[in-house]
Image 1 (cartoon, each protein chain N blue to C red):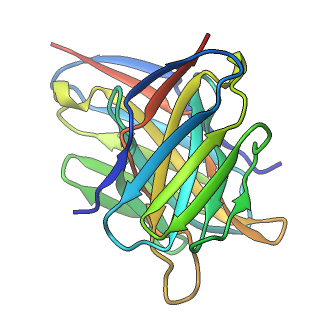
Image 2: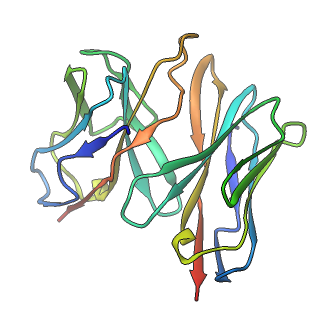
Length: 117
Length: 114
């Protein structure tokens, strides 16, 4: 079974703090993703990575950065947390198919609910 | 605009009853469509995937249908159980502005009452 783990289930931070959200997958997947999920808006892609040290902006990258130093680990960084970044953050991973598509089934972690005060 | 619209937003039914959730999309060209189940406080888990040529696919008590001509999909749940209480998310994969992308629906929140 694929397992995607996230470092914290719940996190409370103050405005201006630097926040690290960690994600680890154990199935040697090439692709990893960070989403945020807000009521009424569904999942929105922040950043994704298709290889070590590679990253691509998603639909809402502003205020976030990412790091992928090892294949199994993908970190989301909030350089200076703001209240509008209060949200549920979901990490996912997937394989790259033989055709090169990165959009095989994505396996999600349990999520981190971040509150910024 | 490439969108995925789900209806209803929320649904409450009694245990043992059947229900159908709807997903309409405008994503084109279309690659595949997945239904995910998300339990409260958990990440989404894939239930089914359907490609352009598939009309129906079952996974236990869950049956997904796809009409690629009308760009509609449905998820039918038979003999609902309390554990079916969750959000169900429709996700369409397609080529948008030259890149393969996923477009997520907002989800339907299903509550099963005893």
